Amino acid sequence: MPAKPTTPKKEEVKTAPAASTETVAPAKKAEKGKHEKRHKDEKGVHAMYKVESGKVSRARPICERCGPGYFMGDHQTRYTCGHCGFTRYKQK
Image (cartoon, rainbow, N blue to C red):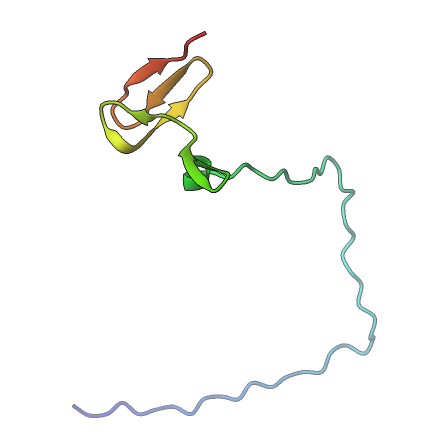
């Protein structure tokens, strides 16, 4: 296969900045309605366990059908397994 002829690259010419040395920043809009960000609670494995006096305990019950490793979601009146759908109601 014949080699393709290469064309020489053109050198870019850099121009000097404008004569004035002042730079004008764009005008900022009034910061209206801005709130500070709230820190969210930790999620994941850290929320599933509690460490008390050097011992680890589960913060939520485990699913009776699925077994260890499947924690139940904590709702207002019930615990629910997200894996199988098992629901256990809280006692008053």
